[in-house]
Amino acid sequence: MSTLRPALVSMLALLGSTTLLASMTAQADALEQQREALHNNVQVIAHRGASGYAPEHTWYAYDKALAMGTDYLELDVHMSADGHLVAIHDTTLERTTDGQGPVKEHSLDELKALDAGSWFNRAHPEYADDAYAGAKLLTLDDVIDRYGQDVRYYIETKSPKDYPELQDALVNKLEAEGLVQSGSVVIQSFSQASLQEVHKLNPDIPLIQLLWYSPSEDGKTLEEWTGVTPSPADITDADFQTIAEYADGVGPNYLYEGGPVIDASFIEQAHANDLLVHVYTINDQDQMHQLLDWGVDGLFTNFPDRLKGVLAEVE
Image 1: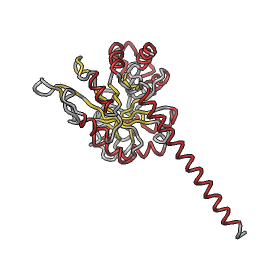
Image 2 (image 1 turned 90 degrees about the vertical axis):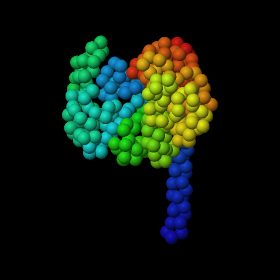
Image 3 (image 1 turned 180 degrees about the vertical axis):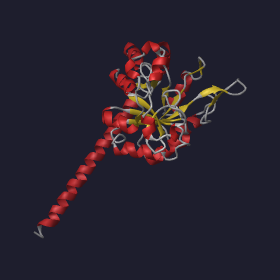
Image 4 (image 1 turned 120 degrees about the vertical axis):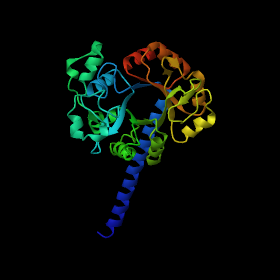
């Protein structure tokens, strides 16, 4: 017995090492496949789900987006007063629910009691559906429990200054569910600090630095909302390289009050600095064609079927 035990221990150790190596290899392959897809295919990013057709961040919007063949479900996450990650865009409840006040001041039970669907029927009667009335807010847990690793998620950290623990909670959840390892998630934010923290927590997660360009106070130049970059006209390779130190791409707006704020040269320069360009939020098919001609790598849209149709035309 004493003679067999060391051999058995060695065999189990070898099997354990082999299993671990196989697991690490599979994870590396999944992450590489995700990055190849991000670089080689135009990504259809369903903005808050198919939110043009159904109330945003509800099962109705998510299920419709997936049925349309979207590549990523885009989710905005805030935190409830009791620490749950909740899928909702605004910091406050008034626009998309029958509640009031900041999300962060309500417990999950209070948030779950709200009607997150009826507003859509009033705002968009052309797409109204009686079934939307009474739709509930969802947690990130709800969404992952429903779709698991069969879906890819494009998650925005919202108002990170209001939730210092948001990044840690989000990364822990994604890792625990195997979504980072399976190449199933991208994280985006307007907050450079939020993305840099996520990068430190797990450098395998693809990150997108969101950008919002609008006229400066003098009205003569454009400026980026958070100061991450200068005006698109003045942006340098060094500016893009600073972003590339922690992120895989940029997510700029295309228009401000109907006028373009970026052009083909912006996209070319980003690409020259090894950054993806995912533009938001494009619902007009002519604009989709224009941006695809310029070489964008992905588009956020409220109408994934429209973008899928355009992509089918140009393939």
